[in-house]
Image (cartoon, rainbow, N blue to C red; front, top):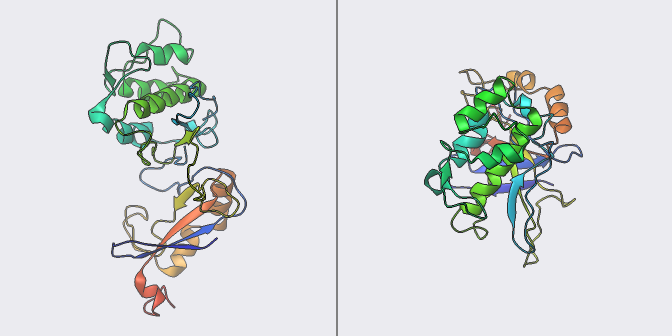
Amino acid sequence: HNIISYSTSQYLLIIRFSLFHCTSGIFLKSSLLHKHILLTMGSKSNKKSASGIPTCVVDNDVLNKNTVGKMDDIGLSIFAKLCGMNRGVFVLDPPDGKTYGCTSFPEVFSTNAGVPSWYTVGDSAHFTQSFKTGELTAEQTVDIIDQYVSTVYQSSVGNPDNPYGCEVNGLAKLENCPSTTDTPRSLRQDGDIVKSVTLAGAFVPEEWVTGGRVLSMEEVLDFYSYKEFKNMSKLGVNTVQIPVPCNAFIGVGEIAD
């Protein structure tokens, strides 16, 4: 289960290890400045893909009517990622002759989600506020996000050949995506989709996570407790990514000790 990835950054080694026997989801420490449920909804997607054509949908195992309320900032988790794709423009499929974006949602999003006819979610800002004030139910919120994610993906140039076209901070997944190679579909031995979170600030300083301070090894044990690993497991996390500085592997410094 242990995998070492190499990069050209200052910290070359990233160790990933499996957590318990969980299935999906991501949990970030509640003290983070921006807490998301990253690994991606209770209502099932109503997007049906044609045979052999991949579609991008919300990962219902992670983002659903029971978890969406735990997201501190939908705008940061969803719209900050997707609003810039295709220069912020998307179209419906089949098209209705109009273009849309984060500042202009199609009425059909609200209609499909069962929102009353007298109330339409007009844009991403309105959507976020409507959810916070309770004007949208959790299930309607997830449904609209699902439609938005799917439509942006369908409008993106290069899809389905672009492997990153469905990357929405871990909140979405590709469906109906047949493999034409013998390459394993998962890094995990059990074949499950990797649902991962980064243990930021534990061994490599990340002061935006740890309240503006660098943690000692003793403080790390308190900052990431066993209880939080259990919470990760309950939310479906099955993999943890731990940034580790290079000198830890050559016997230099506190981390190596």
